[in-house]
Each structure stands twice: as C-alpha cells, then as structure tokens.
Length: 163
Image (cartoon, rainbow, N blue to C red; front, side):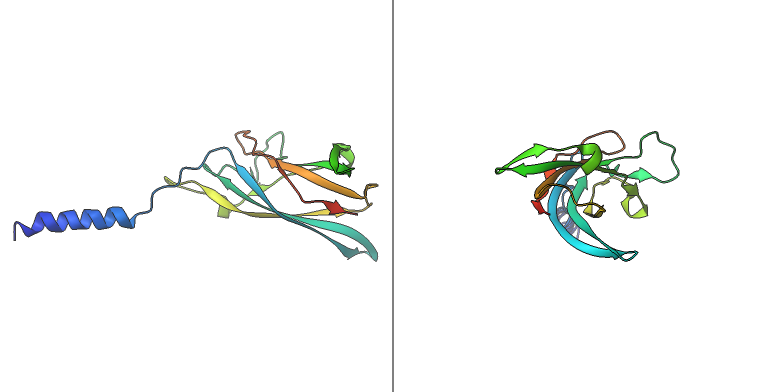
C-alpha cells in the first residue's frame, strides 16, 4: 500500500498538470481587429438618414478598457474614428472635426475582472449616424481605442464605405 501512494500521487499530479490550461499572456496594451462595416438607412421623425454599423473585436490583458460610470475624469473619450476619402485608389485625410467621431466606451459589470487572469476580450458594435451625406463618393475610417492607463491600441481601418 505504501508503494502505491507515491504512484497515485504522481499520476494525480500529471493529470492535474495536463488538465489545466496555461494562462494566456496578453499585453496590457489593448488590441483591436476590424470585423465589418455596414451602411443602411433609418427613419427618424419622418426623415430618412444613413447610418453605419462598425463591428470590431478587442482584447486587453488587464481589463482597463472603458470609462467607469460616476467618475469625474477630465476626458471621457476613448474611441476615435479618423476619416479618409478615397481618391484614385489612395486615401487622403479629411476634416476630422466635421467627419470624424470620438466616443466614450463605458465599462460595465461584464468587463470587471478579479483574480489572476484579468484578460478581457469581446466585440463592440457602434452605430454612426449621417444626418448629411459626406461630399465624397467613398470614405473609410481608421480607428483606435485608449484604455484608462492611456495605452493606445493598434490602428485598424474599415472597409470602403460608398455614399
């Protein structure tokens, strides 16, 4: 029986080691990945306007994406869209104050992580309303997010958006 005890302990240790998944090491700097952009029309107060839906994935190793409600931070903008017009197959920046957008992504209870593995990942959908069509045939956006520590994600680009 004494000889069996070390063997059972070794087998148990091997089973536990192989059953546990290793912790995925993810950077504390957020990463984003463009998924899709779709343009559609909606009715608002008997007026048809264009709207777009941007969908992208994100991952952050320390889950500090998003503004915590109730905090009085000076700057609550953490998602930025930079507009470009398509000209002869290339892209040229256009007025970001008129055609660009800045948003605040809120942090909610689904984004709170406690314990050793604080990695958070998910999908964000954002609707953009165009009350006036841009005076360009085709545009695209470059976009990025900032976490609460001020880390800037990679910059991604949408597909071409035809007006």
